[in-house]
Amino acid sequence: SSPDSDGCTPELEKAGLLNKTKIAEGGRKLRKNWNPSWVVLVGNSLVFFKDPKSQTPASWKPGNSRPESSVDLRGAQLHWANELSSKKNVFKLRTVTGNEFLLQSETDSLIREWYNTIQNVIDRLDRE
Ligand code: I3P
Image (cartoon, rainbow, N blue to C red):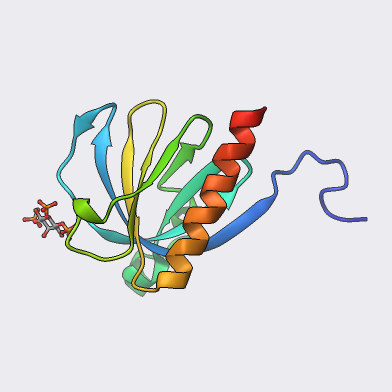
């Protein structure tokens, strides 16, 4: 049987490396700080990990694999937001709690896949 035969383990939908910056916390604007982030879409959440490649070997410890932060996609809003950055391929994710993130990739097809996959999860949650 599959590891999730009980249906209780959230399904891993997508994982990959994107550039990320948080631009608002609870509706309050933050200063941009772009960093590579390992992004995992699992269940109803988008989970961010620090990019291991951006860390020195000495800084790597097993405990560092814990998520940096996590975003509940229920009620979230997704918009292309190239006007919010000098970078190309940027979209904005806004949570119900007023946290806002920009996510970016140099690869057009990759960022479109992420946009569509996240939007599908948001749409699914909207229908529940
Ligand atoms: C910011 C930094 C960001 C840039 C931002 C700058 O400067 O260069 O990369 O965002 O532009 O203010 P600093 O490091 O001094 O904070 P983009 O790369 O997304 O353009 P912005 O203020 O126009 O958003």
